[in-house]
Length: 208
Image (cartoon, rainbow, N blue to C red; front, side):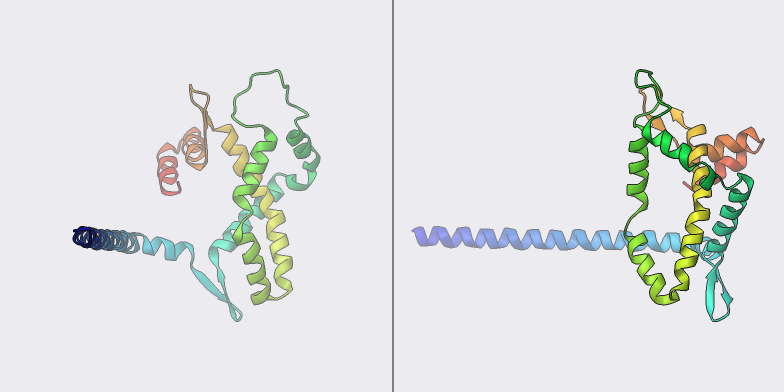
């Protein structure tokens, strides 16, 4: 009797396991099909935009992405316009992070301290791309790639200065005290002040 009961339980367990495996396989197929549909949709309707942004032009024996040149050009303009702010104001930046200009007893808008904001920004910036990307660049471009990476990094500090300044200027403090900001805010609100509110909204949605 016990053997019959064990055999029946074994068959039930095997049947349920098989049914679960079939359901899991069906679910995976559904997810894969949905993912392929979404990829196909965006590839059909936004593929031209991606190709335009990451278009490359031949420079000698190599291909140069236009977006890299655009970012470098913008960083160079910001550096000149603000008078090499990334070098002149290093001391001010360090003092702000140290809290020299912050009154610990004052109630100010914000959820994190200056130092916490810095460490959060670094944690989101320094990652696999910065580590593996440098090694790949050196392997492909040779030692000369180091010079261009350093140059782009130093000039890019001016772009980062502009981005962070605009983010703080046009941020929104909700009634709960939560701070919300970013490109979608300073694009829409900043361009609205220039009489280009419609363009600002389009860019805010497109680049969000």
